[in-house]
Image 1 (tube, rainbow, N blue to C red):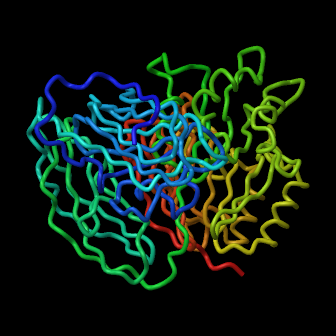
Image 2 (cartoon, rainbow, N blue to C red):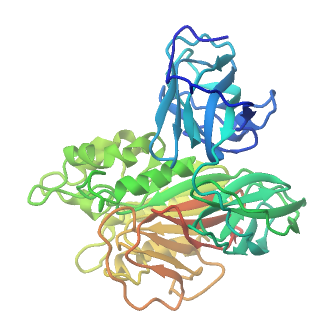
Amino acid sequence: MLPAVVSAAPRDSVAPAADVLLSQGKQASSSTREASAYGAENAVDGNGKTRWASSVSSDAQWLNVDLGTASKVHRVKIDWEAAYAKKYRIEMSDDGKTYTPIATVTDGDGKTDDLTGLNGHGRFLRFVGTERATKYGYSFWEIQAYGNADSTGDTQPPSTPSNLAAGEIGSGSVALTWAAATDNVGVAGYDILRDGKSVATSQGTSYTDTTVAPNTDYAYTVRARDEAGNVSPVSSSIKVHTKPGNAGTSFVLAAAGDIAEQCTASSSSCQHPKTAKLVEQMNPAAVITMGDNQYDSENVGLTLQNFKDYYDKTWGKFKSITHPIPGNHETYDDNKPFEAYQQYFGKAATPNGKRYYSWEMGNWHFIAIDSNGFVNDDGALTDTEQLDWIKQDLAKNTKGCVAAYYHHPRWSSGDHGDQRGSKPVWDLLTQYKADLVLNGHDHHYERFKPQDASGKADPNGPVEILGGMGGANPYDVKSPHSTTEKLLDHTFGVLKLTMTDNSFSEQLIGTDSKVLDSSPTYTCHAKG
């Protein structure tokens, strides 16, 4: 069936001799998914009984397929489920950033769409839904792209990656490392293959697979790619066996603090548009911000217009899934501190009428804290009401894993340094065996060993990660703490947090999409 209105670029004057199916089994991602069972990978698995389904919240949704190499696409076929699109586009991109439409449908009817006569070129193919036909989201059983790989230009593949090895192996995770490949131009990244099927990509030479089942055998290989899409032979295979146990639900969070300076993507030095693209690539279940979301106007203070002009155009794309907390810059309005922050984020800023709150996902309990109430000029505690609430909230928690996030870090090797005012909060979190603490304020990246109330290494304490590199100008750092595991200054990026029912791991993804730090997989503490 061909939709009623299709606009497409003219077809090549000479069609390829034999188009082949390019999309099946390739890496796929999406803007949202209705539930974990309806992931983007279902749309390219060749199985007519599995499907991708977006959330029901918005007309604007997308699904992206990495074809693995630059290709010419002449046909796209979509097998719709009941939730179909009335209007949508098919787009292609060489770099995964700039997309060009190759077909536009304006009167879809929910039957199988077979778009032919196309003249697309690129490595990435994207479906973009612009208007739903039903009250639900978008859902299709399969999207298939047909054409030919483009063999022009650089045709030399990278060398084969070597020394593939498994690090820590849990019930729901496998940590992998390998030696870098070489290329005549440059290696762009690596495909991770599990049991012969590509399951992920990495810009660096490490990756933690958190989509495995407990007590199961797996075989891993990796292969390298260059910018032209040339692929190396696969590495030697390694076999692993995951530990027994219950891996439970797994989800990804994106997190950063100190985000939107007053600049836009038109300036190459502006960083928050770049970090926002990282969040989009992660396709997280939720976004956490650790304060100083938007920076204020000089001599005016922070205004709602500041949020609209800067933050909203980048990180604002994820507003519906963001759980924010304020930093000190959200207070910089002498007349009405926090007003612009609360106007912009609305109910998400004060879901219980306060700027501190808790929320849950999977087996995780998250505590969002307004640390402005704990830190003043002399570092003294002022907000005892909030501290009492935190204690009560921790005492009532029934989830197996606990994470807290607030702006002012208890421990920091940065310009602001350790924050004495945050001590009562840190003491409570250690007392109740919290697992993870996220902070901002200092504009650098720092991951600590688990620590006790006094800041000494202790496996029973929380892991603190300072992620103040969301876009604000970086600060210099001082000598690292004895418990500092990784310290990076003058860098920008986003924390990618992979959470299971009993563990978590973290990667720092830089604005060049490379993995700048990869943590071990930490097991949640037993509560009680």
